[in-house]
Length: 79
Image (cartoon, rainbow, N blue to C red; front, side):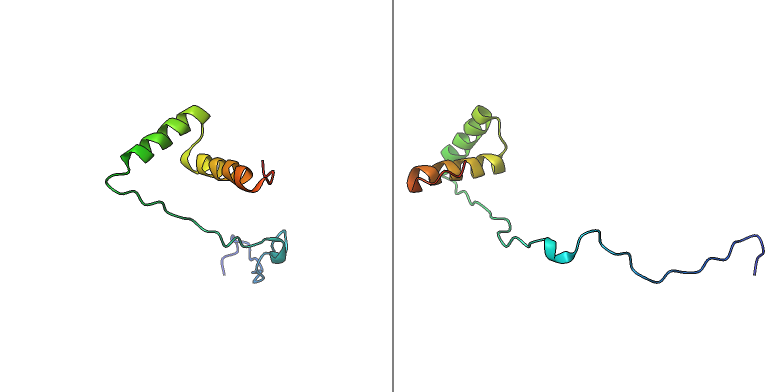
């Protein structure tokens, strides 16, 4: 043993999480994909115009428009 290297006792315990695992919920929604055909260019153009108008990205715009239509259809104030 080298006298210049301090000997340490190895701690074999795994570090504990700050929060118990049951406080986190697993959201099962996941990601979804939108398919566009060759004739759907007008839809993509409308998306781009709406993203510019509302200053939102694609995901944020989609969520906003779904909630807005949900309010119109079901009269439930989600926003």
